[in-house]
Image (cartoon, rainbow, N blue to C red; front, side, top):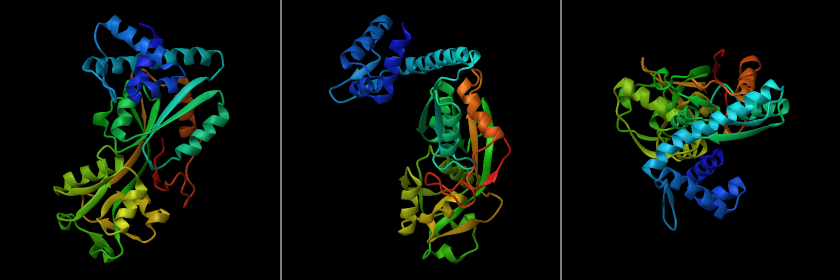
Length: 315
């Protein structure tokens, strides 16, 4: 079993398509297929279930994917460590990020990193927090900027970035719009708009509703902030979101209302770092920027579509 075969296998697993995987790796499709077939023959089991339209991992393929990602991450870390001893910072730094994570501007942070280490290849993956945790645990990501991570679900290090209250966001014509605050017991029966369950704001809202003992139904689920704000503006429901969402230009005609009582939801942003395997040289360099010279949004700025003004937490 060669590292090259594992790289080919992981690419096909991620792309779920041989042609796209071959294009990504800049190899011929026939060569990629032959490499995967050789790996299957060596392991004496199919790794993919193939049809004319889809490529899906088998149970054996799913088991191999976890170990293949760890093996490739270990190989990259070994090469990077040798380069670091030689005074070079090369290789690849793969960073995961939640959308609209508070307390840091990933775009400006990565730009500062690139200026200092132009030989490093940067890769960015935007995913929900649960997927980010899996990515760091499996070695697919060197680190991640995530939200609403409990210490119980992550055994590695969590570096706090910022925390802020969540508010109820509604259209100007909604009955809650003229209120200073809304009690939890008033919320059952309301129509809610929220993100898919993997995203940090949804996780924080779900935890708060559970703590308050209030059941709710999310009728409209979205994957981006702009869609959520547009649906709220059209009066199709209300949303419980991090407070900085209410400062976005698209939310100018919406009304933010505080949630009363002891169960006030909080949105917390953190850096997720790997546990036992430790940081790669590139990740250590990026964390130095976070800890020593954080790239934060100036008040009122809106980089990458997200206003990051929140209460910072010293890393």
